[in-house]
Every structure is written in C-alpha cells, then in structure tokens.
Length: 140
Image 1 (cartoon, rainbow, N blue to C red):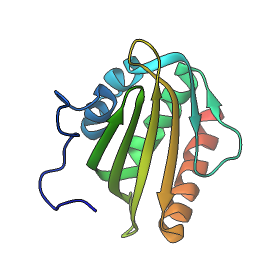
Image 2: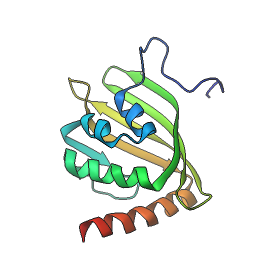
Image 3: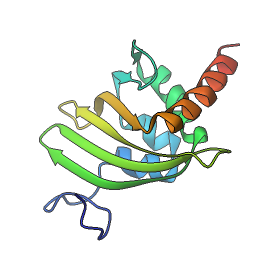
Image 4: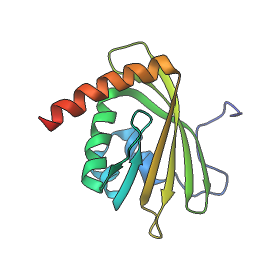
C-alpha cells in the first residue's frame, strides 16, 4: 500500500496528469479541456454512462460541488491508462469516502473514458443523494 510519503505520481512521470491538477484545484475550465469530445463517464451510481464533453463537464461540475477536500493520494500510469486514488468528504456531512478515477486516454492524452469507483457504501449513498438532487435541478 502507499508508503505514507508524499502523494504523487509514479516514479519517472514528469508531473501529474492535467485531469488530476484540474480536479484538485476545482479548475473546471482546465478539467473540460482534458476531456475528449466524445468522452464517456462511467458513474458509480448509474448503470448507463454519461456521454460527450459538455454532459460530462456538467456532471463533474456537480461532483466538484459535492465533494469537499478532494485529494489524490496516488497516481499510477501505464501508457494510455492512469489510475488516480482519492479521498474526499461528501459536502455537508461527515461521510468520508475514497475512490479511484480510472482514466483511459486518447492518442492526444485527453480523457476518452473515465470510470469512477467509490467506497464505503454509506458515503456513496450520501454522494448519490446529493448528486441526484443536483442533476435533477440542473435538468429543470
């Protein structure tokens, strides 16, 4: 498991992927730029994915508002695959969650697929409730 040292990238990587920098700083403009035009987001709460840069950017905007103190603790990369392990708290609760953002990159280094895994169930449930309310409100 992690050494407990600095959160960072795999040895030899020059710097974190821009997606990580954007998510940690809640830079939604940069986050959108890191996404492929036809990106697919596989959510931990829905069976079907979200498709397209605009749709995924909207969902990630709500995620940024729902998660407080998002910190990536590990980043692993192999070719066009990046695995980002994170910790955060669900906004307005004491529910701490941890998860993984599994990124599949295109030939230009943009995120073509993003699959999100989260645990524990109690924090995922709180996250789901807030995201459902936010996404419902943004559709109306």
